[in-house]
Image (cartoon, rainbow, N blue to C red; front, side):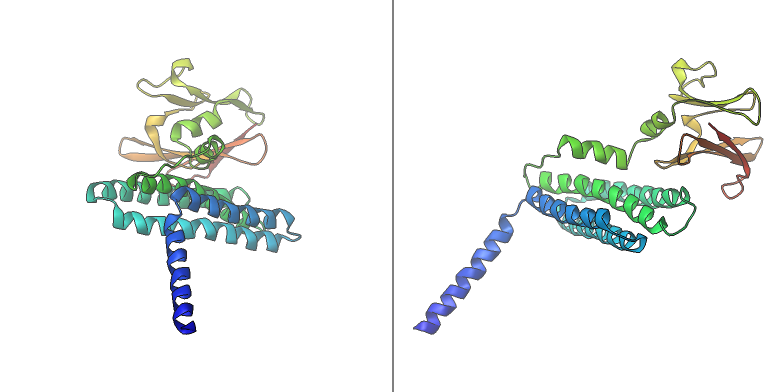
Length: 265
């Protein structure tokens, strides 16, 4: 009798645990991951060496990447073919943007001991943003309520900005002392004297170059690359941030040979 009672107790516990696991909503799941992320962020803040910061930031990125993969597996099984194709195309584009952003972030520090921290931090930030997007898709597909807090929305937009937002971050005019009366401007086309017809944003360098968002080849949060074809020849231009209040404008005949570099302050 005791054996039967024990078996029934074990069965009840198992059923309770299964039921409890099924009861977790997508909102609850993401909140749980956020709790773990908060702990990892604390580890990074309290780290005493650069190596520790690098390792803990890797843990943070892995946490969000694991959740991303978990959500994607469930979406792949549950979405209808048409929606799955749409989300898959978005996911592929996002992966490309993430890889480009991580590389770009690393270049801003020119290698060194903190580069892993910069790489991991950018990857974690972008992956967290994508997790919320996929979580929203999954919750909607299951007819669950999923609310993204305003502060999280802001961080998502900051982690994976649109081209328009990247242009906004560069908006303004700068000059260079080494070449008198040489300026660079990034302005809304309707406010720009050199505005390119049919564009939203125009970039100009005094008496040298006029580009627009219509010429954009690729972009990350830190830079915009332009490609212009004239008379069968390609020219590439890159606008990028450096740490501090400066931007760099480079140009050349290919992506690997943009060696004409000007720094504006």
